[in-house]
Image (cartoon, rainbow over all chains, first blue to last red; front, side):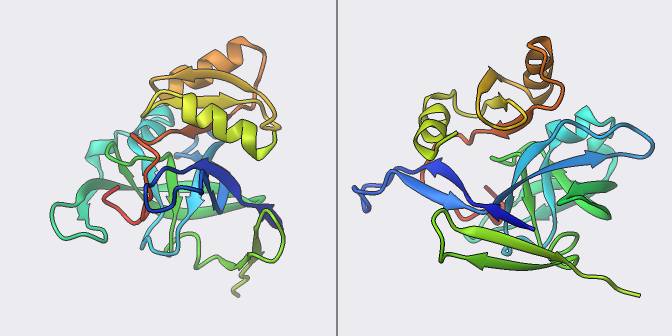
Length: 145
Length: 68
């Protein structure tokens, strides 16, 4: 399956002629236990993220007691304090597939979600293709026996 | 929705807000301060399958590995 990148505003004095960036983004949904899937929300495909991470508000919406999960401070590019994440088992609905994953939830996330290495990249062959405009992200499900 | 329209909508949206688009992402239906409010506002307009997008606190360049 191929999905076009999505456009986002961009503002930086070092790049005065650039007013947008293109990012690989997918609409996904989550299910917790026997609940209904939440309404789809947009996530960035982020190979730099070790895990799939979602905003705490999504966890609340599907009935998770977010702060009851195993907690971990996840650090990023810069040194210093990390953001606090709480991990829970959920089912991720993406690209027509249903994946059982452990995902981190945080109220400090600036976007709705990130699709990272464990839970997403270990389930798909992901190809980023900048040949067309807009660029495409292509997903092929990895089948393991 | 063409890229220009989408960028304009996102740029004009409140920082740290949740925007509900129609299922085909051609129209913006609502903007709210929480995910659930955005979902409810979209449903009130007859959209059962909205796509929800969260805006960050600003549109400066980002590395998405947390902290964000």
